[in-house]
Image (cartoon, rainbow, N blue to C red):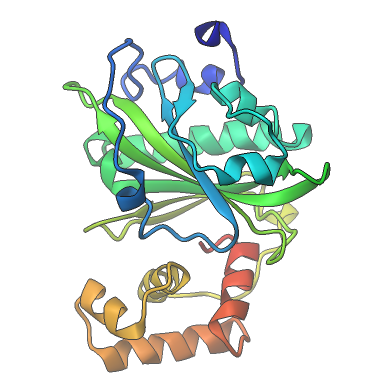
Length: 257
């Protein structure tokens, strides 16, 4: 039975009963395409919906079969976690805890306007492990504000980078511009760039990574087009990049997006 399966994230989630709903309410399936439309997906990707009451998953994008060499759709989050490199599981657990703690600090009432993201290796259809970029969007809350459903998006970024920054991010979506980095390892154990971006430059970088044009970024941040292009020029210079594609790779390596 799916509801009897156990996965390591349960150990984290059980510590936050005020954050995650654990009843068996039946929820309508959301319109996934609308939800993930603005999500940064730098490579071949798929998504699925997770129900926190029993950790079952549904509404999978068909790419999940091809990318992981699966014959049937996973029915439980444990099936997904079993694809993650065993050495990365401790980081995944701590990244999940750091993200929940940050959302708690911001306020659970805002969780549907916040996205969590971090990287880990997953087994592919070729039989090897490659780097994936994980993003989670919170889509349903109960009357007490506890999370009921989320959409997880996984993108293969092996072609962009093979390095894991071991950084978890909480960033704002829709009308929020939150940007919070949380390091898994002590600073001295991570290759940290001397590059320092301003808060505004980080906002512009995040939107560039999501494919926004300079004009769209100007409209989103309510600043001038000229200001956006100046920020973009400064970011490229600071990260020693000539084009946005190089910028995205370095930003992933440095845990900036």
